[in-house]
Length: 118
Image (cartoon, rainbow, N blue to C red; front, side):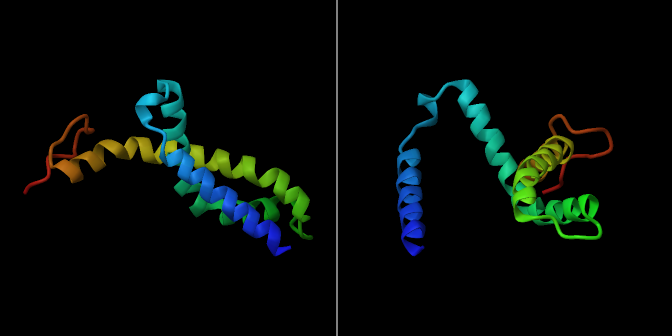
């Protein structure tokens, strides 16, 4: 069983090495947008995978436990959807406020939030 683990580890290391060699300029604009979206989804997915699985289990099977196969089929789409909602409804609206904190200059900031004093 460990042989599969080490094989997967070796394949992942080689995949990361190969992907590190790719220059963003060599990719099309569409592929760069997809890459950025997947990168933006990764942290919300990490944070929310367990709570989403918990809610799925509680809602779909309140008196019994969901089988691993059912959770495996329903979990990833649910986690991806919740992560996408977090990115669209929380992350994107917060980006102008982050820019103010990072640079100290207000650009495209909603009314009521002013420039940060240095």
